[in-house]
Length: 165
Image (cartoon, rainbow, N blue to C red; front, side, top):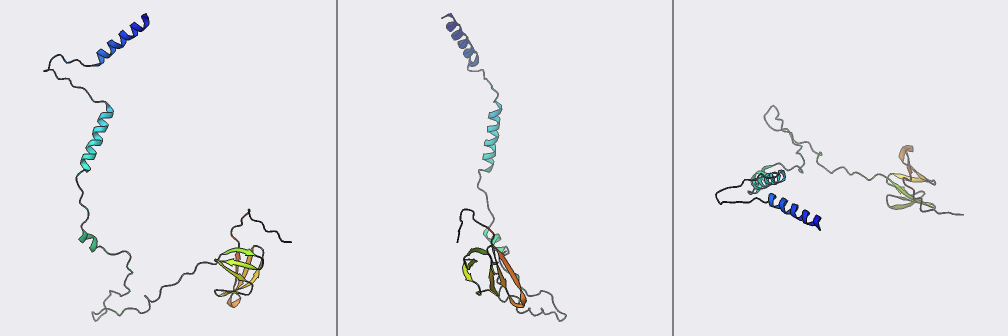
């Protein structure tokens, strides 16, 4: 019991010493802010600095910018000796070049192959090639002028096994 009284007495004294006591209204007490409060004050200053509404770019300025998606004109700006512009070159802006997807062998099943999502058999035409031979993991395509193209299976699934007798 004596221990409890001693502990309560010490804690009361410690609390009394921690709380500032103002004896007269004319005395001002200044306290220093902990470091965390200074950091919070700095954050508050930064927030106040960005609070005013910001003015963006005017619409007229945006409309005056060049469009990056427009194709360049093929008209040359060089003037000839007579001071006139040279005539534009014809055919430059004709049809765009068509880029074909590369041929990909996706599957081989019995005497049929799946190339770019379409099934073919030996002797069928694929673009400018003819399907000449079907092997277990590849196919041979022949083209004009003895041009040969071999397509291989790129990925095999080890979960699927087909056993034929």
